[in-house]
Length: 322
View (cartoon, rainbow, N blue to C red):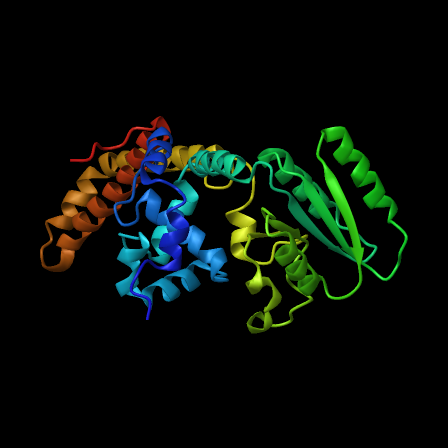
């Protein structure tokens, strides 16, 4: 039995806690939730794609079944579905962009001089896979070795144009043409070279069938980058989507809620002062009439509190932690 670090803890060790803390301080939440910290949020989102979690409820159920291992894995808070949903909506996406930049600089130093491998199959090549491989090689300053699995010995026109683009970008490449199964051919090639930085493939679907039958990819000693043409889960749509709408609340919706609660609060106060004598008359009748002012006070307090919260949230003012 393994009594050392968990796999998730070993993966998270690639990012120093001080570097993450600096990124979190640079882009704080407007209303920080004490239940799940920024690092717990990041660890849960890293855990999700590694274990094929497809929803927030799935993450909560999987992590909750191993509560004794959460502290050793680097997760200190309560990972609940509602907490993750709140964090996904309100946490600034630039925090994770800064973390990605830190990891990219480290990967550039680590993989400099080591080639990457691009696995292609058939004559119909996906443009997204080619762009992904070229961008990664350009970021980490690595060469590219292209492995094409096809029965046709002719070079596809799109691949020839891709090689021209690589030469123009200053990326060195090598081309290999083989027949057989893509997964096993990649495993054999990586074992032969032993210095491949990472492997880029189009998708793991369609070759292995069920997940428990994914055998070739588990034998690789290097990372596998999957450039899926279509998002297949919640996280590929919401966590890996580029842009400011990833974890950022829309300003238009926030302004609409602010104006709506403000108008409703003003209307309720006006109705209360306008019908002051009627409210006093009802509350002085006794018995169950005391519920009338209590209900009115509760409704006005709720709308006024919601308006105040949206107002300070719009200004970016939050309470200071003790």
